[in-house]
Length: 627
Image (tube, rainbow, N blue to C red):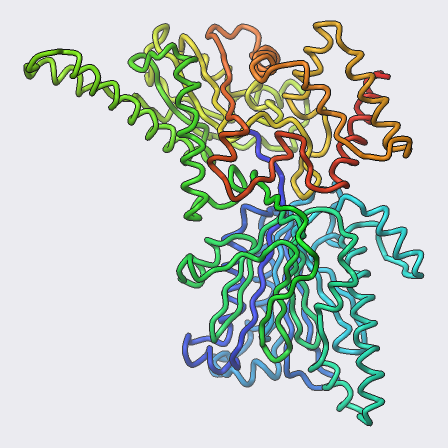
């Protein structure tokens, strides 16, 4: 209901043929550039704050530019940066535009290697200087590096201390700059190692340059620069000499998919994006494994390398519930299963009264879960019809059969996304009044005073929109009972691996648990948890554990759900309001290949995640006068 800012999107393209090939076969030498645009546009949902692209020409002569970059800010950044690139070609004649050799020799961004990035800030740092790709320049072509990624590191302070201890001086205290310096430093060492080898072999001048570029091994660079990275990441990079790579975190938290044929190698954050843009089969697209890197040499040969040993397996489940495109085959089926698994708990909340219940969904991301929920209820109702017919005990007449077979699960499009609240309106009362009208309702869609209204969403994180808009406007329809359904479990813990969920107090489940502690005179639980966190952070305790779990331990899921209802139901609401959450077990059954559930369970896959949730809890306690 409230849109989350989340992880970024990446895309890489390596053309394996000369530009003339694409001109002849596809009618344009801009085949790679056009495909990059589509890959980025199809992932627009992953980044609406900024975008950037980089390009490398493989055949530039000394003195000619060979590495290009363009970046832009705002929701229209993709259109802006590609518009800027195309502006370089606006004065060309049709003959020049159709001349691939001319383009390759003269035009900027007419290269064989492309990399794109879509940014959603999770750190609060903004401005063009923080927009990927980041660029590290050098007179040696092989030492030039452009880097972008979908990631968030939990141990930036430790890494910063390590690299400054080695004498490096990063330009900014930001994880991307620090990673750029780490990878760049190791790339420098790799080039220098090869330089010594080539010189000892008697090579001189440009022969040394070409030999270095032919022999460079990015796997060495990544193996020496990435082991200390704690967090979820897919990092992509290209060098000025034409090497390219993408590496995934060893826990498999963030995802990346790749496709290769004899014309092109492509990598993107999501599988259906590659399917759509290249019109290829799902089975031909591969997922990058945890700790693995996709490496493409200057010559275009591709290989996979295990950079870091896998550390368990924790792909992000929120990718499946909310962030990734629902057009992916597996994600579509998983989201339907999430909805289907909610049938039984919903029935208990409506007293098995399907005849007087209307089902709907919050547009737009919950629509697939809604379809699964409807399939589940139709199957349930069909079983009921069979029992009703069997219970007649005789050959039923037409009227009896028609009465039974005409029973239907009632579904309506009750909520409609109407306007987007404009952020420049900051005055509290006016802003709250506008928020109450973010959704519109379909009048006449249920019988006032008699019908229940069941409405499903993919998640309930902060509950802000529920309280300010959804519940109040649904209550205007006059339902007897409003059942809010979440296809995900209670979101109890922050994420530190790339999604904009970082502070404790924003979670309605956490606020509910803290309110229950206060109601029942149990605040000593929070005091004790805060003390344990301080001991761990000070090094008194040898093992780092998630102490925030203690806040939820005294209560059942149902008790917390009931308190959430109390906190979110607006004053004056006439209908009874209840909330149904997916269980963690149901989540794992629906999404068996993505067990990363730390948002719900508090089981962070890395030590950095545990440390950060504990630190966040201490900050909450200190700001609220606890302990």
